[in-house]
Structure formats: C-alpha cells, structure tokens
Length: 431
Image 1 (cartoon, one colour):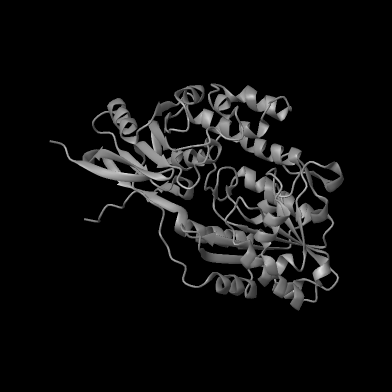
Image 2 (cartoon, rainbow, N blue to C red):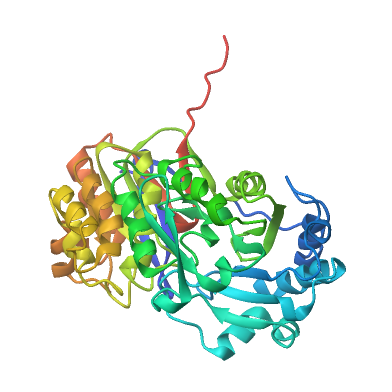
C-alpha cells in the first residue's frame, strides 16, 4: 500500500487539506521564517545614520529646500508612520522647515486615499506638522510631462514632485512581477506618474517575452531606473519585512546602491531553493487572494521551477472573483497575445493594464498546463482563461499525477506570493 503525506495549506480564511503520495513529493518549500534582531525604530535610525552611496540626509538637505517625501500608499505594508518621524528629525537637523516639507502618497492609479487614511498612514505626529497629498494621475493641471524613458515610454509625473528641490522615496522591497523587485526608483516611476505613464509602464512588460519575477536586473527595471535621473530621486528609505510584517532590515541612501543592498536582504527571506524542477507545482496565494488580479502573482513565482510540459496548480480562494479588471480572464485565454499587446499599445484595448500580466500568463500556457483551485472563481471563469478548475487541491494534484505518470514529482509552495523559488541542484559528494 502506497504511503501518503498529509499536507495542510492556507486557503482564504481557512485551511485546505490534501494528501500527496510520498514517493512523488519533491518537498514543501516555504519562505524562510526570519526574526528581526532589533526593533523597527532602531533599524531605521541605524540605516539613516549610515546611508549607502550618499552622505547622511542631514548633510544633503539644505534650509529652504522644497522637500517631497514620496511614500507608497495603503496597499503596501511599509511602516510609513514609523519612518516619517525619523526622516523629519534628519531634515529638521539640516535646517529644513516644516513648511517646506510635504508628503506625497504614490498612488500609481489606485484610488485616492481619504484625508483620514492619509493621516493614519503618516501618523499623527507627522500629519500635524506637514501637508499630505495624494499623487495626481488624471488631472492635467497636476501633471508635468518629462519626456520619454529609454524604451520610448512617455513619462509625466505629479507636479508637486516635479517642482520639489529634494525628493525622498519611502517604500518596501518584495518580489514584483514586472520590475523583479519593488522599491528603489519605482516610487517615482510609475509611483507618482500619470495614468497614461502607468499604463505604458505596465505594457512595457508585456513586450518582454520572459518571466522577470524576482530577477534583479531586467529590461523593465533598467528602463525605469535609467529614466529616474531625469527628474532626480535624491534619497530612499526601503524596508524588508518578515513573513509577519516586522521590519527585518532597512536600507537608506542612493536609490540604486541602497536598493540593491536591500534586495540582497530580501532574498534572505524570499528565496526558496528547490533541488530540481518539478513536474507539478502547487502554489498558494496566501495573504494576497482577495481576487485573482492580486492572487495571480503566485503564478509568476511558481512558473520558473516547473518542467516543460508540467502543470502549475494555483490555490487561491478569490472571494471577490476576477477583481477590478473583468476582461483579465479573457485576455489570459488569448492563444496569441501579440495582437492584444499591439492593440493595447495603440490605445485600442479596453483594459490595457490587464493586458500586461495576461500576456505573460498566456505565453506560459504554451509551455505549461495551468489549473486553479478556487471557490471564488467559477468553472466558466477558468474556461475563459483556459485553466482546469477544481474545488479541492487533492483532486487537482491527483489529476496532474495521472497526466504525468507514476514518476512525476510534486513541489508545494505554501508562500507563493512571498517567495522567489529557484533551482539549485545538490552537489554530489566527492568519492
């Protein structure tokens, strides 16, 4: 009688159990559980005292400088309310008056934050001292054109950011489907860019025919970073968070040099090492599965560690269905995404931002079989994407094993959205 390994995985607000034949199980590969060794305030203060690639902030800023503190919005877990008071300390030590400082929340094209949300995000000590703004992305009066990025993308940014004498970016570093990693110059472009720029930025990834998730140097990030000096980003503060959202490391300083150091810290948490590619990979979207638009990041994470012809099984509750881009599923189901991308670039696609990720997933289908385990998505949703649909992870794995044969290997990624799986074969012992 064959032996089985019983596995329990996070699924929405509950757990899902499945049984995998032990002989087929390559392994369960979670992201690392690393504890922060110091309180967040100490880590942030230490980074500000010893920046990477720049002088200390209090030595760079000057009295009278109009200073924009550009922070990510409430869709990120960055401890902005902890960072900003320490930044204000540094700027005040440089002689910058409160009236010359202001916070701009980098929305991309997310909904505008309410005054109450902005105050909560900045923290009461900061909200009572400096002005708080949402970045502008639709009103032409609040946007300034800034030429084109190296890849031809027309760039326009928030006027308050453009008119600042000194710019500081505040964000976090985590795996990203387009830039490889978030953080660094991304807070400027596309963070505080116009809707047209954000759309064009996303579409630039659709023209890349490979998966850049977790790849440090890639065409999208290169084009973005090459442009950043056009307007200038003088200083960054980026945090790396543990799996329970505690600050693990903080970097500060030059937007390239500090960012790359931060990525090396992030890799300590997010990199997940497999001994070989698997025939079947089951990946969850734990903590990012409200809808498929968010949850599909896990597909990008898992794809590189699956053999050609293998099966990717995506476990995502998606209680809110497909999400804010209803045509996303139809775009994914496109057999040839080339015309779709061309239409989006020409302004003819109804939801051009959704084309970006959809085109990459559609290309994956040429190499892999894709399946989803979800109660929030219907069989019809899956059919539009050309995914197999299951309500139970055990059924999905059993079907994949029948397809790939008795020797097929199965890898489990329980932290798909928070992991960058890589293959590093074990070295054979010397004789």
